Image (cartoon, rainbow, N blue to C red):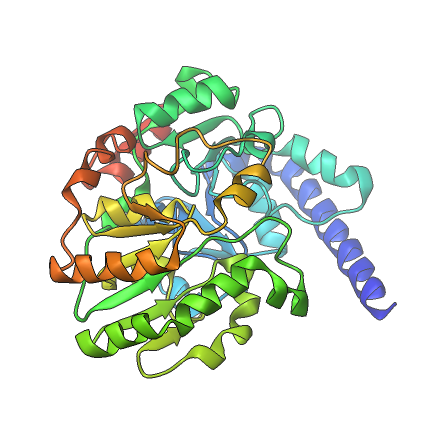
Length: 392
């Protein structure tokens, strides 16, 4: 009951702030629009993806422009972000006012930052927003078909979408309802800062989350996901390999599964560490590690982009594929830049082979990359900026 009362109070207060912001906007519309405000975001707690790197580029190259980043005040690594400046905090008056006034709104995850208002008032707020809405995307659109959620007719951030390749552009026009001219083929901003920074041998274990498993609490311990990851961490051959070759293994769970870190802490030792999202961000982990073990995550493409070896551990392939109405746009068992297996024993053999080859990129997987990356020149932010200022 107490929680419901607090939620209602929050909603009423957000409705109040939004109403005041709309009144100010209508009385000062010309002045506010004249500021040419840019709004950039990812999720309420993240600043490590395409949004962050484009925001950082804009602040460095065009500090005179009114470019702002929206995030929660209590987000991890907030102090680091605040050093860049021009931060708007989720749910505050200025944030709502600037959303209404923005010329451009860019996000990796939609219009989640709108105030949580009562009933029809939220719809009114959406209609008042007139800025060009640009979906920055989160990962390469190949492994997962998200058209049910992100189709142009359903998704709120749907004027333009950023793509990394002609393959992706075709996916968006064929399956997501976009016109060709609504696709900004610029490459992802985060790839401008995608270079290895390896100082020690680290294997990064980074599986993605599973649908309908992010609120299981202790029932999570009965899932195949938990049991398979647990088994791998306890594998004596793996532990012996790590010890013999002086290699560390980092387990980093998806943001939606970070709450389950507590169930893996028992497996930590001097070679195995469970990494919390407050300690390191995804980009940092990708750059400092020597080899990636993932599954169906688009992070596989980020890693291969750096010419580093990837293993895709698809232990629940059948259930994962069958649980999704919309299927991947590629064969994820053969068309990804990774060594693919469903067996735990293969993981150890792959790792031994990769270590023997000095963690060099697997040459035969390089052929996959041309399909998924139009550019590899570290000018994605520059291209995106040019495209945006020329939008009609």
